[in-house]
Image (cartoon, rainbow, N blue to C red; front, side, top):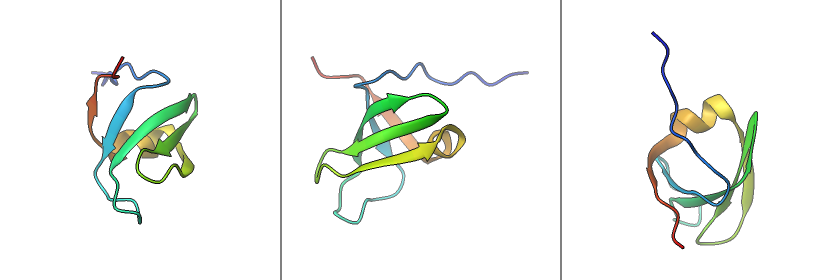
Length: 66
């Protein structure tokens, strides 16, 4: 049985389980591939996580705001 991952896209907003040092938990995806690039919505800092690490860190995903 294979586990399918949610269809994340660039611009999608996600909420991570742990807080960023600035106190934010909301992140926007700006790169999506083997590594996932995230930008904190509170302070603007950008980080990259391995896809597997990202999938474990996501608490829930929210639909993008248009």
